[in-house]
Each structure stands twice: as C-alpha cells, then as structure tokens.
Image (cartoon, rainbow, N blue to C red):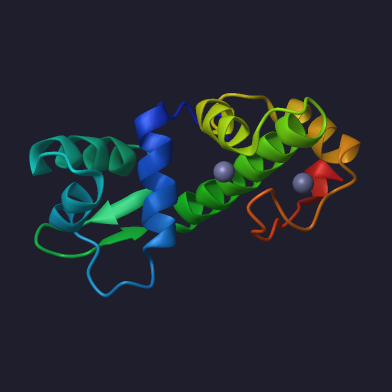
Length: 140
Ligand SMILES: [Zn+2]
Ligand SMILES: [Zn+2]
C-alpha cells in the first residue's frame, strides 16, 4: 500500500503534514515557509494529495490528513526508518547517506521488500536516529 503512486514530493508533504499535525494551523503558507518554496507550488501538491483522498483542504482552513493519509504517512515513516537502519547496519553506509538514500526509496519499494529488511533486522524498536519504529502485521 505505500505504493499509492506517490511522487517523492508528495511523500515528503504527506509525512511533513503528519508530523505537523499538532501545530495549530497547517495551511499552504506554513508549508511554503517550511519548504522555502512558493505557495503556488505547495497548492499544486496539496491538490494532488487531495485528489488521491489523502487529505482535506478547505480554502483558508488548515490542511487535515484523512484516515487513509495518516495511515500512509505512518507507513512511509516505518519504511524510511527500516530502510535507513538496513543500509546503515547491514550495508555499513554512513548514517547520513543511509538516511538520504532511504528518503529516495521509502515510497518506491514493495511492501514485501520492506518486510524482508524488517525481518533481517529483527524488527528494531528504534531507527539510526533513535526514533521509535512501530511495526505492522505485514512486516512480522
Ligand atoms: Zn532518516
Ligand atoms: Zn516493521
């Protein structure tokens, strides 16, 4: 399911919105400021995510992820943490490179591949940055 045909940028936005969920107003201008891009390009990505049923954006209101958007964001975070930990621990890549590479792959690999990595690592509880990893039935 992480392969909901998300582009790299869409995946980054989804995860960022998920992490910003506690902030009072998550609008397109807040996102534009965060990414250092023009608001018009943010509006474009947000519209594509809305068309995919991953968020709801009413004009002049905060952006809210749908349940499906939340689940997908959580899976992308799981995948990122598993891939970077795998690249670092199994392939001995430096942590920074492992993290960068994981960002390129987190929305592209099949679930089966991620599950294999997760099993090889024996379902680690934290990633290389010390962040918690929550697991799924499908990765056990
Ligand atoms: Zn990372
Ligand atoms: Zn897992």
